[in-house]
Image 1: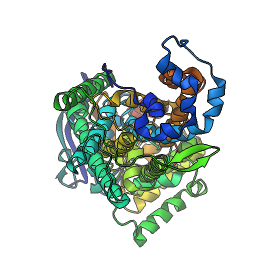
Image 2: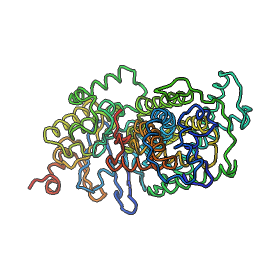
Image 3: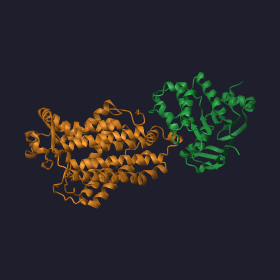
Image 4: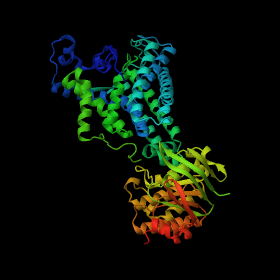
Amino acid sequence: MPAGGGRPTPPQERVISPVLGLAVLDPAVLDPAVLAPLVAPSEPWINFDVGLLVDRFWANTINGLAYGSIYALVALGYTLVYGVLQLINFAHSEIFILGVFGVYLTFLALGFEPGAIPDLPLGFIIVDLILAGLVAMVVSGLAAVLLERTAYRPLRRRRAPRLAFLITAIGASFVLQQLIRIWRGSNPEGTIRLLPPTPVFEIFGAPVTNLQILIFVASLAMFVVADTFVNRTRLGRGIRAVAQDPDTATLMGVNRERVITITFLVGGLLAGVAGLFYLMTIPQGAVYNGGFLLGIKAFTAAVLGGIGNLRGALLGGLILGVAENYGQSLFGGDWRDVVAFVLLVVVLMFRPTGILGESLARSRA
Amino acid sequence: MSLLELDDVHVAYGRIQALRGITLRVEEGQIVALIGANGAGKTTTMRAISGILGLQSGSMRFDGQDLTAIRADLRVVRGISQVPEGRGIFPGMTVAENIDMGAFVRKDRRSAQFDADLARVYELFPRLAERRSQVGGTLSGGEQQMLAIGRALMARPRLLLLDEPSMGLAPQFIAQIFRVIEEINAEGTTVLLVEQNATQALGLAHEAYVLETGEVTRSGTGAELLADPTIQDAYLGVT
């Protein structure tokens, strides 16, 4: 969660970076409005480029849905924990970045080298990606459970006030981030790209890449699994019961501590998957503080959709991903994050409980 | 041996002493009432029995076993089921889901017994059957109380703890709830009943205890206490 200096700003580079391959195919890159900031430092501090917004509408939408899916997966972790503990687990951004490192280190262990573009049959690549994703899920899932055990459970035992949990969450975020920095250093890891994005088809002239399809579909599938787990299984009912009324849940025989552990585990597993998709989208994203901005955005997405509400997390993530792309085209690249947070403020002004409002506690099956 | 035995139970909320040495017995098959004013410690006693609150000192035994050694969420497995004060309906779950939560610890979900228990709950409270897919939070107070009782019954309890089942209910609901309590008891479930509605509770109870500021000040059969002029004065509104 805490910010650090010298961090690359991957989302902006995503559009113009040649690493992506996407850029070459993207007519908007040739647009002076996009190139201008690179060549002319005297660019006005804000643009109002409606033409670019219209030109890039479909590209931004497609791209935003794919990137927003990653927000959504991370947002689910915030929302689940909030539902059960009424705690904003700020260290969730580090749980996510640990997953990213899990993916990266798996790539290294599989023999891939930074910078090289592997020439492997698709089948091998898929197996490797699945393997990396599983490692990331294990890493993030275990880290989340360990975090719960070491940071939050002792506070519950002592019946600490809510503020103590919040400060602990922020502290845990720092600790994890710095541990990663001590271990891997401050510089981003070299880029390893297993699956270069290639356009599969076009929607209104905007290319849709295999990577975007994969991320969007797989994230949606993960969401359905999580939603089904919470609403349809016995354990999921235990989670909802604790979220709605912890004491009564205990009276029904629900083991609250076990529910809390499982909630952190599920949040961690989803963050691990998000880590895989993130590193596939932003290959230079494996850096110790790389979880910060994405974590804050995912948290924003959760609040935007209605914190505590699984469907809200999904909706919030997708809306945020798309909206900040539009904002980037309309106002200029530097305004991307501003647009995301202003959107949050505006939505909360009119709907203080988020778009879907109700929390996990109140939401229907 | 009684089904439930509390001996010299002390419970505190921080520095506030809520129970100062409660001793009581609940015999198998009986209805036992706990009456007393607001703040006397009735709900605290119930929450101590179900394990939501820990004891400062004293002992609790259920069916001869030390209850304090059993985790709160496992006490329902042993046969203690509670209808909490304020009913504790899960507001975002449907009536059917709430009832199902009552059977959370049961392992015989596919058995004929389970189906029979479920059918019995809907038979006791036909209103719940009509509202099966309605969300708990939108039910009336009386319906929520029925739901809370039906849900507690799904655990097949040996001891049913009822905390203020008549609170805030319209008279026709109160009559129905008390009728059902008697029926449940007649079928063999032991009942510990906390009530401010002392007349009706004592009328139903085999045994009763009067709580005042965390202590038992009187006990006796329901009929004895009903006839006692000091009890009438203090709790029954008879002048």
